[in-house]
Image 1 (cartoon, rainbow, N blue to C red):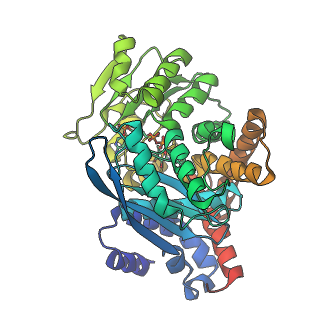
Image 2 (image 1 turned 60 degrees about the vertical axis):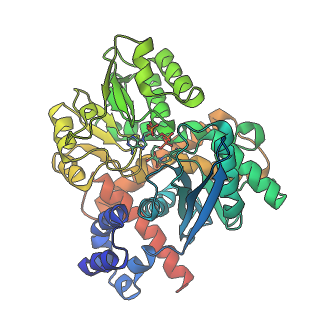
Length: 449
Ligand code: NDP
């Protein structure tokens, strides 16, 4: 096992996030390999961590002043062993191969846990949509899709949204694909329900994370009602995590973006959340503007000179990191515990750094890894694909019922796998083991390809 880590460190030097994601899975699946020594000779791990295909391409586009810019586009097709490649797109200046490989790797196991027939992929670009006009975003999306369209299709690879890729971007991307291929198909998910999307897809990741948290609390005869919650982010996942928490009687104190966070001691209620949605999704403003409207709240600017994030240093019961990777470090973990947190549920992908995870597990917190807790988004994407194939639209109630059932099943799968391998209550081990076993079984069935 140590050899595999040495191998990828030498082979892919500098891919820090990818190494982090691989190490976590390798450590969790050690008992599976002990039980199935044949997997080692078949180099299953080595095969799982090597993408089936990586596509990297130039994305030239013109701004409103006529200046041409060049960004880099990617699609990492990690595994198609369980179905066509499936996973989001991320547009953010930090995007690089390491980040997309980590996300694609996580996606393989996440998709396996949903039980829907989907392989794993991730893509995106180092393009920054913030501060760009709608026309600039459209031109960028069209240029990006003019290349990506050669590599995707409704039975090959079906991208969806993610950081920086919301309803607006999915619309522009879909329009270009349709024009180029002369084909109206379910090639992307997260489409508007007006033209082929599924109800509840925008809500699914956040709602699903809260359903998962409710399942975890249920093991201790507790519910969301009355729980005080810290939420980070103010994008898609954070908004709908907050919405479901409020609906189930929780009290949400915080939201953030990369510039800072707001703390509202009275709680962010439905009306205040509607303001945040308008601010972020329509006005494309900053979370700091919340205090212009709700002056009782406090705004704290992000301070990179601190070795902790003050958002995680408030008294509460539950924490939902919903912004980005590695947003909770060791110090934040101790702050959360000292402030009475009993549950940490990852809405974002890999938001808790490895040492912080160890601290949560050592202190017996209810800790849910993103690949289980945020799988509701891709699960409803799978349901969108099913509806597209059948040429019908399920009602919002029907999709939400299926989402709840999927989250219930993922929760049970994690618990069962963890118990089976001697780590009862460890959702991280359970998610990694259950996802890995499904992928490994399919790989064995399909031979050395
Ligand atoms: P959005 O772009 O809608 O929102 C992201 C939020 O996180 C914004 O508030 C953004 O602030 C903040 N953020 C992003 N990068 C950073 C950073 N480097 N430092 C601090 N804050 C940051 O994305 P989503 O809500 O869709 O995604 C959030 C997380 O959830 C990601 O990890 C994503 O991979 C994961 N996820 C999303 C799914 C989905 O269905 N959307 C499905 C499963 C996982 P700012 O506006 O300032 O950049």
